[in-house]
Image (cartoon, rainbow, N blue to C red; front, side, top):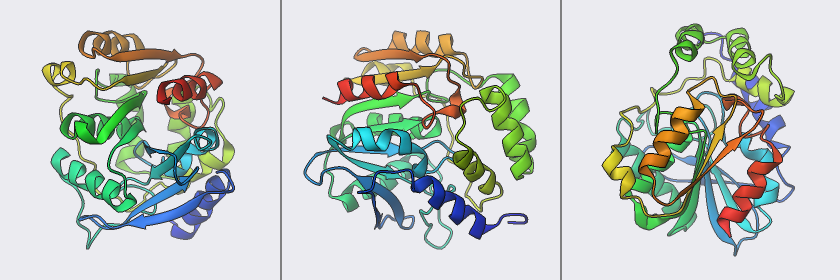
Length: 284
């Protein structure tokens, strides 16, 4: 892609990855869409926890702020999304085109990791994938947590989409920074290394992300696994209270936590301590 510097992206990725625990290791597992890259930490015999990042330039490296704490009692697997910025590859350019394809992809990731069933969580677009996977493969998901999920319970704010449009149409490092500073409130709480990674991901040769309608209310009502929903109080992505209200109407085995003083794109790396505490309690 014009303007995309792969060396700068790899360097920025490695700098954020250096914030992970010392026991971090990398794994690559085969899938029908190409190899999936996974950052792993925690005891080998501990219960598994699979983490999916948001879209755009988020990458699995963004979970560094939670990886150490969660890795004390869990075997943490943070996966770079297929067809998105990161180190997961595509097989001859083939990428998922439907939700069913994403289910096949994540099935293959779990199989490659030797994980039969797991706790599963995601942020933003990653939460959308996690929720759809839990609805279609409930036997493989023990517990589900959703971190400020998009397009799950409410749509995007119009103002958010309008602000994102220049970055989406012609991504440049400057446009990425301007957008993130707007959404987070002048970049409050953003890790400079993480921000450089988002800038370096501008123009990454990614596939068109799979999109679709929000899950049907009747399907959500049938979801019987424990669900922990985190919502960012200062999110400009969607209406926080609409998300919590609609989730409360359809999820019958869920706990909702509103995270104070944090925006959508400051997650997960700049999350308040309450996120880690509540998540640990939920995964027990």
